[in-house]
Length: 433
Ligand SMILES: [Zn+2]
Image (cartoon, rainbow, N blue to C red; front, side, top):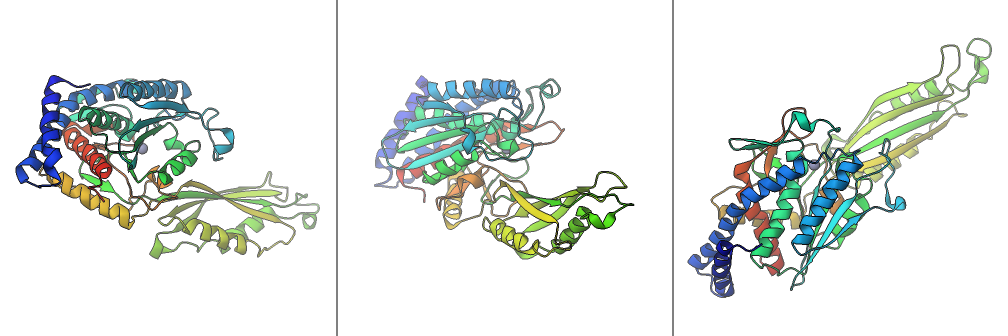
């Protein structure tokens, strides 16, 4: 919505922009900066209202009713901003099978905004949280000084609200130099995006840049170029039961075979590349006096390079052929919970540009190219593209996945709205790399 106040900024902005590229006069550039910065300031209380509404809808990943309510809320907002909006239910064939999936996975909201240019820009965030229903009453929305508290407010309700208000600012500025601006808000990130990963990877490959809106740190104002990959390996050993006292020789001891396999698969970590594989859980057997007919073990896998998982799978499947008990059957199945996001020349260049934009506000933006251990959907968006994909375009916040009170810093709203809005505008106009 255009207020009379923002209309006057808008005219000032348009005047300065029309001559800005031809004659880079400092005062005109700073007029444009001031206009967008002031608009971001005016947007701050509205963003807090949106955040309050989002926090008040409980959206644990297994709580489909809550996720539906949130999806309808987001869809209505994007529609009101002029987007073509659909709520996407993933076809069953597109759902990546993981252990422990809920029966009904949260849907994604996709908003498409068409502009006058050619660049395609994707903004992503997620509306689901790790919290079971009923926790909102312990962490209601509230403001205390510079902090806005609330359940899931940092991870990732702020990301959803920030995207909505970036789009709102772009509309107010009449900034439509992009070809397509796509917004994707999914409802299954916290369970490794089984239903949305395929769509996110596809959208990532169809856009010229991807900004992902997980929160920045409350104590470090940063964007991230890399995140960790997480996978799980499940070993299943089939043997043959037999009476342990009467005829042990007729059995095939699955526990012995598993022990043998675990020992020969214990040294697959590669510290130099950040690949880690550790067997952490195992079980075998039925009762004491039966040769165990089956055994299972699970390994935690972390990686920093996308291709390392396939290579690891190859090594494992070659090694398990060496068996202690030839009659046993051994399989190892990998679950790719989330690939890593790797820093690329394109993401480094766009991040450096973002730093210059932030400097216009007199602020320093940290660019973090080292993963911190967590994984995000930015990695799916980056799977099939060389285009820049950058994480942590959201607000500064604290407390994701903890029982401590989550909060965001209110003072980060204006600079982060400014940053994301400018980056979208400058990618659209070809000014940003
Ligand atoms: Zn998140």
